[in-house]
Amino acid sequence: MVRETTLGSKAFDVLLVVLLVGISLLCVLPIWYTLAVSLSENSAASAGLVRLWPVGFNFNSYQEIMGDSKFFNSFGISVKRVILGASLNFVVTVLMAYPLSKNTKSFPARNIFMWILVFTMLFNGGLIPWYQTVKSLGLINSIWALVLGHSVPVFNVILVVNFFRNLPKELEEAALVDGAGPWYMLVKVFIPLAVPVLATVTLFSIVYHWNEFFNGLVLMSKAENYPLQTYIQQLVVIIDANTMDSEQIKKMSELSNQTLNAAKIFIAMIPVLIVYPFLQRFFIHGITLGSVKE
Image (cartoon, rainbow, N blue to C red; front, side):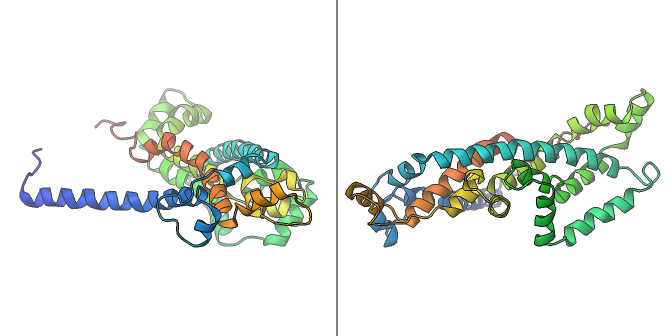
């Protein structure tokens, strides 16, 4: 196929590049602005003088956060929560999606379970029954309270179900002819072909468990059990001249909630920014193309 090189096609390419650059800037500028504010001095941030470059460059906000042992404790809790939560979400999603991707002939109760899943997306038991259930199980102040309560990501299950249903039926028929059982087909056929969608839903789970703060606020009565997002949401700079010496007062006066919050936000987004590039490549291509030849 010969690509057209007319003036109109070249103009379209230029406009497309400009549009994509503009969209990229819209995504990057908020992150850059947050970094600039976090590195600026108190008076400049409070006066709204910070634009794209720090004003009165300093690391006071980061020193205040990084010098707090509670910060690292909450950071470790969030890392543990992400590992446990994302792993559990992956296992549950795959084990639910595989049988639900079958037709009613292979799985007669399929439609019943699908309706149950859809119902849970539209309705829930409410905050108080949810809290009472977690409390009755003895999970308050436990990492499992943050993990088990969201172990069934219904939206992710439906995404994987639809992906499994679109896989060529000939692959499963060929595996059955060769004597493969359900577990073999799931592990050796379906999961390898579903890497793009599984990477996508895994990223969804990682982002959710990393960014969610409300469950930690409700289910953790002790501050030392807070995950990172709950911890930084609760952080408040309080200046009490009666309980501080002159050096502490000077240090705290150099900080503001605006610069400190900007530093919190930037630190909190770094892990997701690190993980995303490794999973992003699975979003832009499929691996089922050409898996079945006519």
